[in-house]
Image (tube, one colour):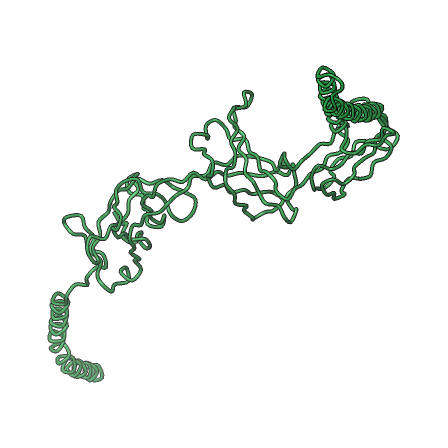
Length: 393
């Protein structure tokens, strides 16, 4: 019993000590909580008093956009003037390279006969007057004989006329005899001219044996040889030799009816060819056929190309673009264009760092620029790069 009393007394003492120790902490706790709320209130009042940041792009009531000078957006905007540019519209048509007709001569046999020899072969270069072939021809033999006889008759007629003049001046003969001699001389001269002309038409060079020599009428290269020694010529419309000069060639293209409205002589032309990828040949329109082809409804347009290096060959393919100049129009870079509610727009600088959105009508062309039909004036300044940073509505 005594032990239980001592135990209860010890517990009472311990509890009294614990309560004494805890009382200061409980008293301090409300003070700490009050200080914490006071600090939070002070922080909130400090945040309300700090100035708000200025946005890079500010919307004005009149629809203008103001960009803060020196801001990141301002540094990325590029502003440039609306300029005037000259545009050429090209009409492209397929074509070919052809030999110029005056530099592509087909040599035909002037009469029937037998080929003695061909003095050229394909690829030979010939000068004017070089021999191409020798042909034995009965027609040439007859023409030669006629010319010789006509020359002899003319010589006789001249001597007779001179003799009659002498007799009449000496008091002999009659005027009638002199008139007859004069008529005979005139007839002989005409016959000799006819015989010589026929002989010249058959060949520029003949012999009494009836051998005629075909000669090259131009300087160039032999492109076709259609005969050989020993062949009898029965068809004088069959070409024997073709001589071609390609120092200058033509490019001919078929331009459809829908594209002929602007065609004119002297227009600039650009040509490209599969044989020379990446290279553009420049020339001008030198000829337009007056009659449209009825089956295909096209006009032949030709240009002249110098070909001193001989790299352009007849029958090569070419693509011809006839450039049609147009009056100067406004030009803006395509990087300035933005879509807004299905409309094409640009941002126009109304004063430094202030812009307005404006709708424009444009025509897209190949390249970086496009034509402006309406909405802008020459000299106005627009955002040419970075406009997407203003396109937030």
